[in-house]
Structure formats: structure tokens, C-alpha cells
Image (cartoon, rainbow, N blue to C red):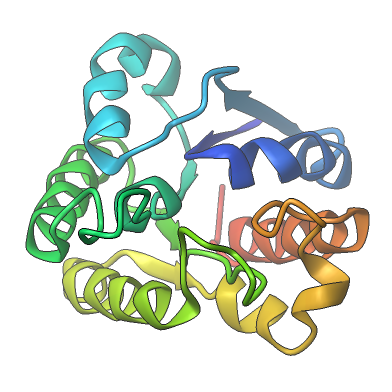
Length: 183
């Protein structure tokens, strides 16, 4: 049985059950019920979930919306440099568990979202890719997958996935997991 770990924020919570269904028999899927929130929160959570993550064949993870959110009009909660540093720390720990680590880019929002913007999402995604790819972390570009029809894939709360968005993202996650030559 192959062990898969899913880490991340509420976007991961949106698609995780469908990923488990699509993977089917032969895969054990670990995911925690808590929202991974900020990258720093996910880093801290790794301490608690370490016993459950050990032995994973593939780890698929995301962070972003909480870090880049601008609730007060004074900029993102997390400075982009700190975000990249947190991702680097998370990746370093995950790569000690398995060389098969995938990072999912932050998904787009509807343009009316008052706190997250696609321009800022694009900047944070570039920083994530530039940080993680040289480390050997694969990138699952969920942003690009959804970007072509945001109104179809992002629900009326302006940030989370519609049923069609869940289906598309779950399929992309399963594709990323199965892209590894697992014994």
C-alpha cells in the first residue's frame, strides 16, 4: 500500500476527500482535519503530525492564501521573503521523509475578492516556484488549471472551490501523485 500525505489550507480541505476516492484501493491517505493556514502554521504542525507523515511515499502540499491575504489594506500578512523562507524550511523537512514532494500553487480568486488579488497570488506563486523547484520539489500548477474559467471553478465566497473546481483540482493532485514511480 502506498502512503500519501496531503498538507495545506482550506483549498486542500476542499479536494482531499475526492483525492482519496480517486486514488482508491492501494493508497493510504493521511490528511489532518485542521486548516494548515499560514506556511508558518504548517511548519509548526509538522511537529505534531510527524508520526503520521513518516513513511509517506508522496507528500502533496500547499500554502498561500493566508500568507498573501491583505485584510487591513497594509499589505500581505506574510512578507514574500518570509513566505519563501518558510516554504524552504517545510520542504527541507518533507524531503527528509520522501524525495517525492509536490507543492501546489495558490489557486486564483474571483476578481471581486477584497482581500486576495490574483496579481499578488502570481507574485507569491513565482516566489514559491523559484524557491522549491531547485530543491527538487515538483510543482502542481493548480492556479493555471483553474485560471481559464475562474467563475466556473471558484465559488461565490470568492476563494474556495466549486464542485467542478474540486473535481479538477482532485484530478490534478491524483495525476501528480501517480506521476512518481512508486514501488
